[in-house]
Image 1 (cartoon, rainbow, N blue to C red):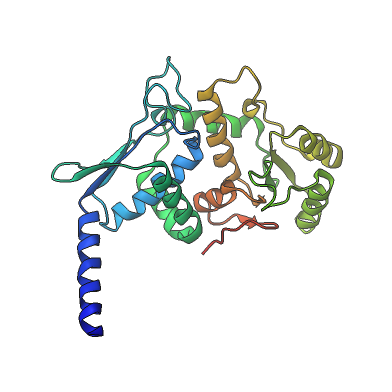
Image 2 (cartoon, rainbow, N blue to C red):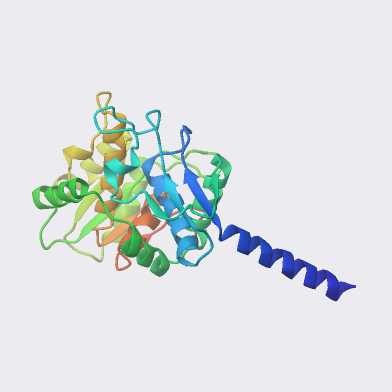
Length: 275
């Protein structure tokens, strides 16, 4: 009986995989978690499936109510930043909209299980920036990035669930960064945070070592499209660093996938592990 059950299970599993290979997915919706970095990870997970022949492709199709929408720039905010928004073909495929929980699952699996090498390959093979985004990145590097001096990126935002991941004290994080960079020697600190107490503490501790990039500041006048642009530019600049210290964030892993040579220091209770 057991062998027949095992055979039945294998046949069902094979049929399920075969059916999934003929699915073409749509990423759309109005959910608040649809920011550019989270959708970037969702797209990376779907690209992994597509590259392995496990789906027929997908399309990122936000409308004018999307999180980073700008009336001046068109309805699909994803195309403000990236030169691709669809891959594969929906012909002869089941076209399925991905619900919010499924996007979260794909994103979580990508962060938890995808190797740095695999992520790097997929990003280089399929994902391209819009020329305007690449030009802005190049200009920021030209105007603000240190020449011939190591740069240490520090990314910190307040934890979403402080009960699970206790927040860092600003002074304690400064001291930890000092400890991590002591063997590097002369270096610059690229701090990425919207928390004013952390910004002030790092300026007090590191002074002129801090790399200040006004282009990435958000305030009440920052538009949703600009916020998305700042989030993506921050990730891309972290990937330019020699070392990244990123307690509890997706950005550290993303930077490592973009640049496998950087040293990533993960602190405290961050639950994702690089493979």
